[in-house]
Length: 358
Image 1: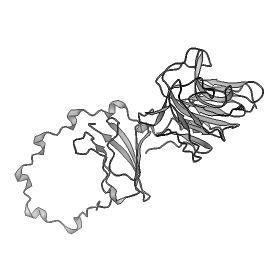
Image 2 (image 1 turned 45 degrees about the horizontal axis):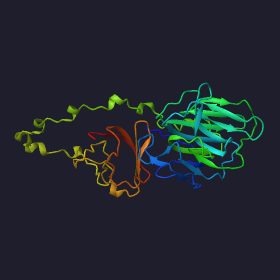
Image 3 (image 1 turned 45 degrees about the vertical axis):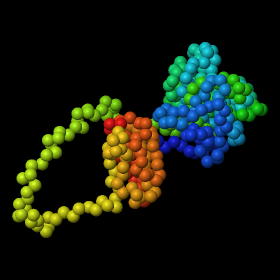
Image 4 (image 1 turned 30 degrees about the horizontal axis):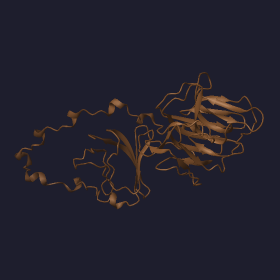
């Protein structure tokens, strides 16, 4: 049975999925303004689902309203294309006046304050909280960063695991300065531009728990559904049906008359499937005109039917409502996937789907 991630929406005040644009889907409609950043493929290689920043002039401004939070959670996926010069860093997210702000950034140095992480400047008292992974940056590698600030500490999670906490100074309110700007991909003064890709930025007005944070990286909870790569390889010759196996001897079609007499109590009544969904478990989108699409029989009888397709890690790669029997697998390779179908009448169907010969 599939079990899908339940990413919390409690306290979610910004949700930038970057699916075709920089709009906010939290419900507050506080959309971003894009400057020189371009849409690109995300970590699942889905086109136009993340933003590419050029490291020189690219950034996205988001409305500051409501972001001067006493406690918060910032969550984002990022992929740096180049390393900053040694001893410097680049900005993924900065909220507030430079050096009086709350940031997620990279830091290319040595020691505990290197790698992915962030700073949280304080309104009074000691200058800032600092929490970094302490591990050297790797280029062209998608990483999930979560920064959580409470009244007592700043915590850094990398790929949903806690790597650093700074609780040196407690009970200090965060600083946002006077020139309050929120910016993705650069600091507000036009410096420390990020060179790479950014996706799925979420901002919460509360600290998320560890259990909630793990949902950002976990989408299938049943390990039995994780399919080893080598088990998805189907030998070509196993798909070939010998021609002579299709030849039926003529005399095998002759049925003795007395064999047609069936006792009444043994009659089998066939099930009428003319009004039921018939869901295939395989299709082969090789553009030969045969079985090129994931075709569900009788789908036209269910106008509110929805289809979700998930990869073997449980990440949703396709969704359509209504479904018109028009999915050909997109850019995804041969392998086993999972479907979740709601017929719009209160019934849900789950199962595996294999793409072959793509």
